[in-house]
Length: 202
Image (cartoon, rainbow, N blue to C red; front, side, top):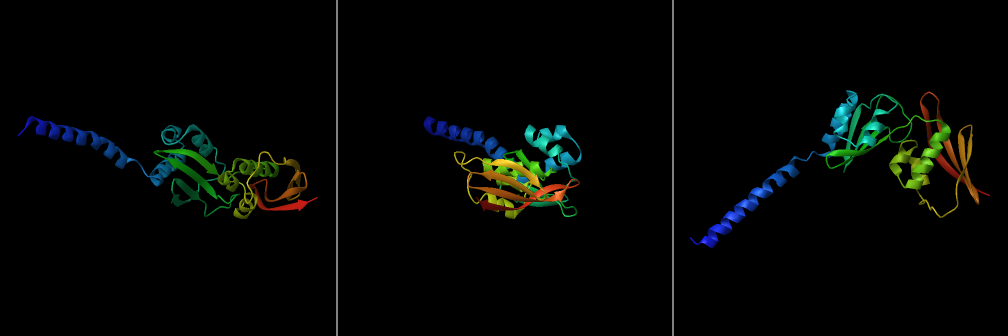
């Protein structure tokens, strides 16, 4: 055997050894459902220390501020988006519980159903539209309302929307040439949601 051949074999073996830990680490990376469920369990135990190891500080704060009882159904994950929903209580918004966004081994963001007054609900939905964040919209509005407002992309250089307040079940936003009317339903006890959206022209 030549020295060159032995050197090549040794180098190949060393390279294989070096790649094993990386492959093992990749194989051991937790899947989104496992990460989401661990965070959910830490929340149920009111264990912020454990939650902090599984999620970003903002995600932990949002989750631990959830105003309703815990959702009772794991609705699965689509990619890195994992949902926990309610089956025994009615909460505002199409989200119907919690949505965890998982990236790698951590939950980076949590969306939740919100308990908000009428005006706050209207402003939360408009802010979601400005950000292009449908999930934020789902926190306080029905699927139909979210679909309607996101039908057109927000143009930051377009006409400004001015909040005109809420009267009965309608919260109004005026703009040059017309107005957007958010039809809001709910109560102070359980919070409000935007059920539908209409537009009127001047």
